[in-house]
Image (cartoon, rainbow, N blue to C red; front, side):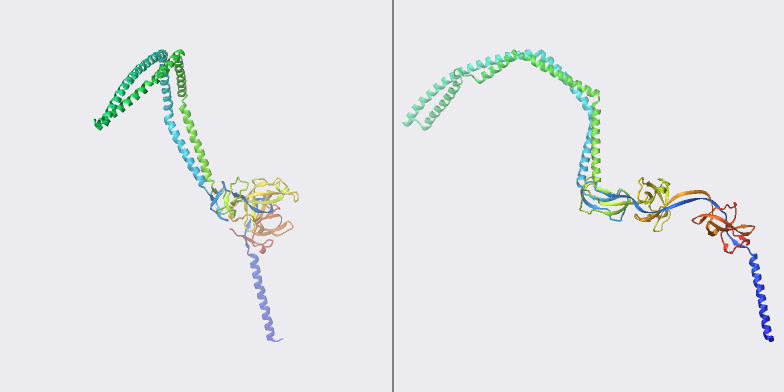
Length: 525
């Protein structure tokens, strides 16, 4: 072996020794430095066990909007997919007839109110005035009765006397008239004869032209006048022929007969009876008027007038409701799902058997979760309990309230239907406003609860298998390995069945660097 080769061998040995010394120093340094770890202590909590079921979402309400009254559709106020609030106008139908009915009802109410005002102002005065008038009428009737009793017989007998006198006077007048007529007839005959002779003589002279034409005409006219007077006298005298009765005498005789008859039947007694009946009637009217005043009948009239106003107000309200009914409003908050009619169509009222809806509205402020669950599980839940719901769209922990558990069991699979109300308003938990009817959901139902359970963070337990696991605890600044029994895992925590001493510090980090007895330093967070 050459020197050069020996030198090379010695150099390699030296380097090897140096490397061993360096490694040994590093290992010793690591063995003596504590590992920085985070620790926790077991906590006591309540464990809730759940069971999950599949279901779907439905609208809480689905309402069809019908026409309130039959009529032509004149306007549509919503479109499919539009959000509507309760009371929003959806449809307007022809309102001309309803408007006229409101105008008539308003006019009737105005008249009724005027009648009430007039009655309130005048009824009492009118009733009291009726009493005064009836009292005056009674006094007049009583006065007339007294007068009738005193004077009726005398007046009727005087009428008989006056009729007798008038009849006698009429006869005497006719007799004088007859005498005068006879005398007038005699004079008229004399004058006629004289005028006839004068005319004959004048005519003869005229023919001989001894008298003028004017003298002849004058004689002729005198004859004509005499003939006329004679004819009138004959007519007048003819009125008094034997057996003829003059009208004036007949009238006087008729009046006399009447007066005699009145006396014979004692007509004054009838007049007295009539006057007495008038007094009786006047007394009855006065008594009735007194009762009306005593009963304050005007108050009843006022009440009737008020009732008339009330009735008119009701009629106006009905007319206004009928006018309002020409406008169809949304009964719920929701979304227009379907439109069934168009402008110009004739809509039948909801009461008609052939009526068809105009819109279908679904309510989505609250949705209905629907699922089936076994009868045994259903016995553990009640109306009003809360449940957690998740959707296939990734929305978690939606809180629903159970409001229906079907009393009917499906015999094929021994399940019942369950409903829960799910809020879907904007701003609600988990942004529920994005929920859609028809979506698939998973419902978590609480099936049990255990209290005062010992829990550790899941990352604190290593090598979990067959109900056991490993943890590192800190005692005297060193890590110590412990075997423990574990239960279920609940989210980020695990149930510890083995009993840990209160305050035991359990390492939750850097466990891969630890062995039994490894020095550790606790990192304070």
